[in-house]
Length: 250
Image 1: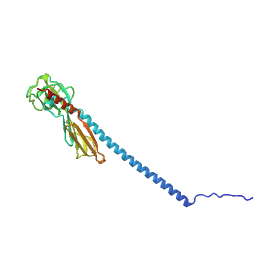
Image 2 (image 1 turned 90 degrees about the horizontal axis):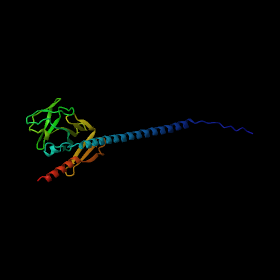
Image 3 (image 1 turned 180 degrees about the horizontal axis):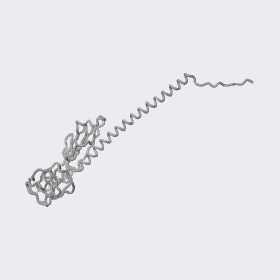
Image 4 (image 1 turned 135 degrees about the horizontal axis):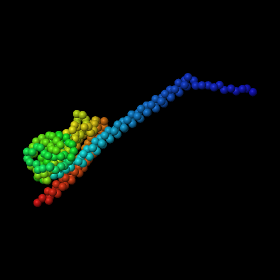
């Protein structure tokens, strides 16, 4: 009986090189796919971050618009101040931040007023004085412990029981085309970025419907502008009240 033997054979050089080539191709394809996937993920993440930053800016504008005209109804009816001014590239929002009564009657020509303001405020702010018939806006020059000094004399006299002194709050939101930023400015402080890397920002207001349309276009997503429409309820309510008051006049 013959012995049958099997001779173990390994890979030939050609087979080894071929296997190595296939493995290298698979690894290269895997790395390329990973690179494309990562690049796509980063693009989506960037787009989401841009969209979120614009949405945050719109939410901030909406919240500030809710303060428009607060404590200014009488002053608006006397045509002393305009709570809201809108242009194609800016919004100016005014409100009464705090309201206080004077300690004594005020006389025309007076600049030094005895007054204890409830908190510390900047000497660069403006105050609105008014009663039921007249009023005026004055800039502050100096604030002392028990008094304030106006930058210019009062034009009118006021009875203390009929007079309100209002600390004005002014917010300006505007598009800075030189810096490609939507910026916000509080009172006399320096403007701060609200949204960056913008190609354009525009505001349009429809008087009849009290609707404000805001459009923001990112420089990275020019074909995907973010738009919103805001109903200015404070302005609408103020107009309704004024219309009723006019209708009640004899």
